[in-house]
Length: 316
Image (cartoon, rainbow, N blue to C red; front, top):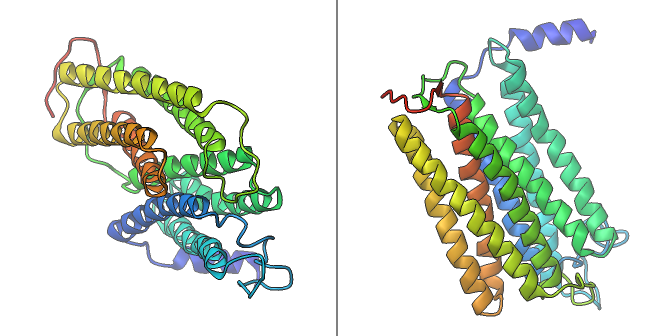
């Protein structure tokens, strides 16, 4: 079929509804976060090398097989995480297809949607590299940080679904800059967290070398980033109060405060109790929630809000 004919047939397809587009975009957020959490389950159960190669599970077999050195449960945990990549990919491709079919076609929206399946491919390759390098701590860290970026972009995708979003309220001129700074601190917080993990006991496999730095020192650095980040979030709340913002933005803000406080409390409990496996996965879940909430607030102050002069108060 000629390319022009194929393009004409695609363009003739009906425009998908906003509700469907939003539902699929939210599914992308959920699946991107879920695979980060299941990745932590692989690590804390020591299943990272349950499948010893990639893209096959065992040499000569795509699926787990009986093996004298690897328990069946570990193989299936790792293989299940790989299967979930397919679910993430389906949601990502569906989001791109819907964005491409939406009319009028918006370049920003389509580009964000295209980043979803491309990100899945990148993550699959990184996962393979991680396995082939026997779970070196920095490969695991890079794998997680790319997941963090994908979660952030998927929230932006949800925000971009509406072609004409409802007008927002005015916010103080200093707020976008403060939130951008907080994102930089959040990146430092996440990187420090991956280093704590790299030096900690949960390597994904008992034979994997760990980061040769004191875990306690790294944990203190991680906590310092948390305190700075929380302080910037609270400062953002003060600025929001002076701007007279609407309920939608306040709701995003208080969700962020709640998840940051819960994540911080969980981190301290995790440290004091010797990093139990369940709390590790819950902490990764909390990290994804912080990323989602931060991205949602960041989008709310840029895409739906006008910037007010200092001291100006306008209600929506």
